[in-house]
Length: 384
Image (cartoon, rainbow, N blue to C red):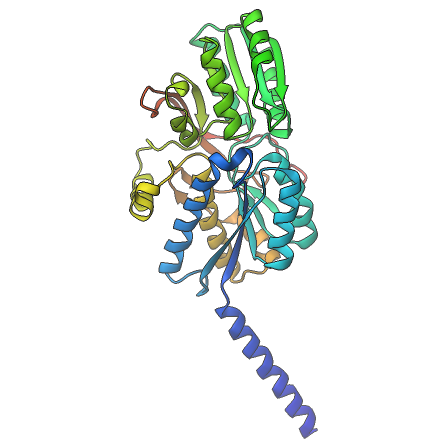
């Protein structure tokens, strides 16, 4: 009897000691992101916003008293690299959560690993929609929120009746333009051409030649974020294409990096640096103070990343634990007010968003033409 009690006491003491040690371990946030490949233009801004969020949270005592540790892995902006990155983060680094901006190809390759491991995953990139998993939440826009402002503006304000569509040949490019084509046709417009180039392609000559021969009223493109935007836009400008041009994939930072080539492009975003809110001003000041001359322009890919880390923090604190299932259950019940306003991923694991229709000016800044409040993401994952 005494030995049994002694053994029980030792087991209880061991459990308490392990629990205390676990509480002192850092919370690991895995960030698979395209440091190489198509997303290499925008990935550095995503890493910077992650670093600021972690620094701010740690300065305030961490999450449930535990410090935040970021583990960044290059997914190569594609499927093979993503499989390696997700596998490493989940099974070797044993991260508590994955929070990342990625290409759709990378997301689709990594998601089965997330499902198998049972890890919370917040996807912070705008995308083509309808990617669903009990473990994944999305705090960025989908076509229902982003496409309609551009098409409506071209048809109603620019008098466009015919359109030409150009995309990168992968899930995002095709998914976005499929929605765009359907919406144009439903609105009484006509699509004269729809052409694609492989995601790593850089010679758009044949497609631009076809575009010019068909003489549409407006152009809408949906390429892999980063490098393909730069090459396509430069070649369009060099070829003399000068019609209303809406880009569904360019972020504000990439637009600035294009220089004069980006002038006049229409974009539809959930974040622009010119948002006049105290939260955005505070965020921009903190980014400037932390990174100085090394600061990459905050954009519609990096800001959702920053906010997602705070949403994860809120979910862990609501759950009282970093237990994966408890966090996943808590995520739709929490919100965070950040640079984009109030964000809550409670609409079928997606979020209503305020959207801004803007046009790139000569100096690389974006003039906001119209604001659309609380745009619903529509039916994305009704069976979750």
